[in-house]
Image (cartoon, rainbow, N blue to C red; front, side, top):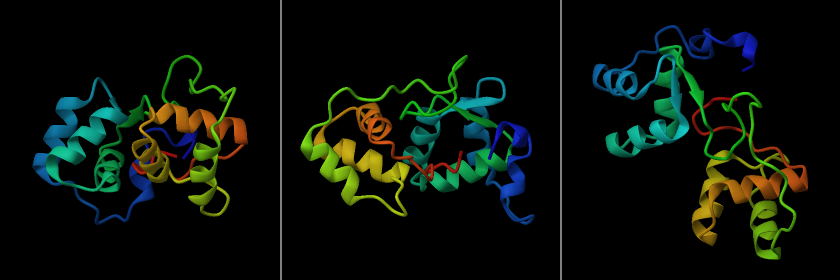
Length: 144
């Protein structure tokens, strides 16, 4: 979705898609204005035992913006993204990234798994992808 889709996120989902009341309340409690951070969405998913994409869909239906991507890819003012290309990439990190590619892209969920496996900050994985000119997509929350 693009900035032109802002406020129309619900259109990504079928008309019958509904949000459970307790999930809705939790999202609204964590939202600041009309924004919710990626970390807050992750926390909600973990606490409720839901998949990230289910929480992302609920956020879309509620027309709330997801901000402050934990990979540094979107949702930061004024520059949109904050991740910078890595100056150096370990062979192990590069190997893990290349092995996890789907259609020449690294899924967000795979980036998180690589970070966990290699005990690295998530943004270090996205910085390596920036240097390797690899797009991280799709977002596990469905944000982009």
